[in-house]
Length: 400
Image (tube, rainbow, N blue to C red; front, side, top):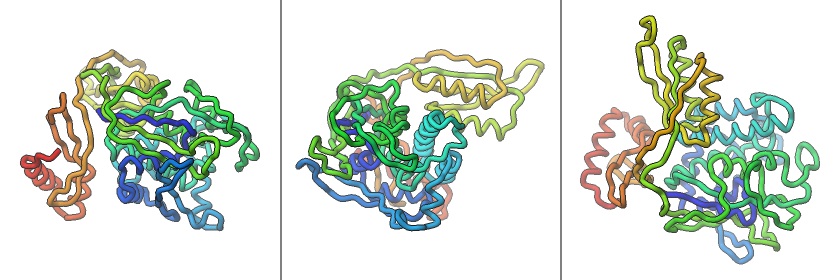
């Protein structure tokens, strides 16, 4: 299994995360292509090699020409609510995992902002977080994890910095209230630097998608990248280091929770919505099973497979979004192939392949559905023909 570790010795921000991914091998043109699926306008994404305290890294820029002007687009994007942002992501043609992770990050931000300002999640105006550059940072981070095939993300204790910053709410202490809220129950690192080292966007990304550790996990290191911040701080190199490798301590099985409930009085439209919410809440899989219930009624078993850290969130979805009066849950042990995503140049164009291995031996290769769908639509051919052609080519492809 491919894992990654963010070494946050100088804090973490959205642009530093994107820079680290690009420096570690994520091709910038692929990142741009994926972000275009959001149909956002008024920005340009670019990158360059820079040095911070003599160490080379990659700086990613989200250039917004209208940032200091009076563009209608920039002004509108500046006051997005969480439902606005969720709709932008849901309407895109991004891979479902990318959508789910992006929405999860923004939902976490909204929950923290709502608590700080004494309002509801749906009413939160994100201000800086809702700006174009932060949408690009957050969705871009989800894209980076997906394209690099990273299945598990870890991060080091986070230094927040100190002092004060100016924003739309006035002068705020460092860490900003949103950053402090996002870092609850996380390990922090104390540094005597009067600057904002960790931003709300950076904290939201790592705490939502990652797991905090005191030290780097055991791994066979494959690549290392450095994402650069905007300033060249004299106190410490303004860089975020990412270490990507193969997990050397993973067992061939892990434990998950199976959560179930029986329903016989909900419409198909609501059931589909519940399915989407289960994935957004952290379920790794969810499915419906038709059953016959008491009094001969046709019903549905809603089942979700859930890591323990997302168990309460999934339970909340079932109680809040369905008509159930109770749920069943039990632990299950599952065996998993080690998975990675690689790009393959087929006769129909570039396509990502999910590769499953056991003890280094490839057991399964599966083309990404979204790529096959795109090719089918671009070439005006049936999706089943795309799968047939790709599968035949893979039978003779031996370079994975």
